[in-house]
Image 1 (cartoon, helix red, strand yellow):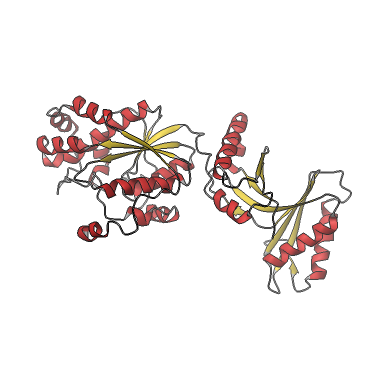
Image 2 (cartoon, rainbow, N blue to C red):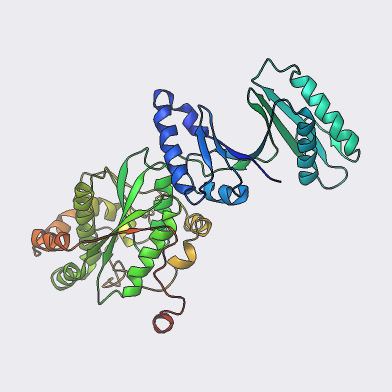
Length: 409
């Protein structure tokens, strides 16, 4: 069918009271960015829904783009018909039923809403007229008031009739940017891209912080993190990627800190540096992909010892999820296959065979005194590499790295 517009419904935004206008404005901006390739469309935000007039653009392609815009509860492809052409309304309603109910014995219903009360037919008149017309044309179908196979929705407004039968669930959540900005600690694993996706879903604009330790981590590990960021950018638009040099810090920790505390001290450095970047970039919080109890650094005792270095809010969207739940989301957002590629990040190098799962905070602080913390961190901060990653950017070559993968396996 040739649809004339997509009608997007706000859902949670409808509860925002006096701030509602700001949320709708942000959603309008995010949809505009997501649909930039479709030059003919026109977007008209209203109080309870948004009308995306297609002007000949592909409805299916536009809907595919809308699937990744947070803040939309549901959307429907719609055909608009002039208010004076009720015969065309009948024809389109029948076409929709034919498309959605091709088999004999299926059921349908007409559901009319009328905001134009000056139109001579009321909702019951329209329901009966369309229902009778379709029944005459398709006597093999059944009219069913509750849970029909097809529900044709008809809205009668001052500027015409609007018909639809398909309602698609949107990405839900809040428009990205309405909850402020934060930084996210991105590893190359499964969990942190999922945490990024969930942060975006609650309206948080994020910038990625990635720790890179050549020659212990390879260029492909860095490329993998950047490509994961490009996957996340599909839900956010362009994302800032901040690369932190971490080799010297890890070497110093390896040399001067007892083996059992290597991981704890390393994570404290990472968190302090991330917090400095957050302050520099005007972020309000730190997000990461930690899941309680999953690895040694993610026990509550470890988290307490690591969090000791900052008072900034640290938000862990996947903290209570089972690993299989995290994997399901990773598959949904198309990061899983990339995450499991065996390019080690700096979290795994120098990993002790028996890290402390319940590190003592006072001992942690004591061991850290052997390091020139300020000088090491200042040097890292002076050598940040900042770039912008767009949706669809590719960094890992298709053949690549086959030798490296083979070697790691």
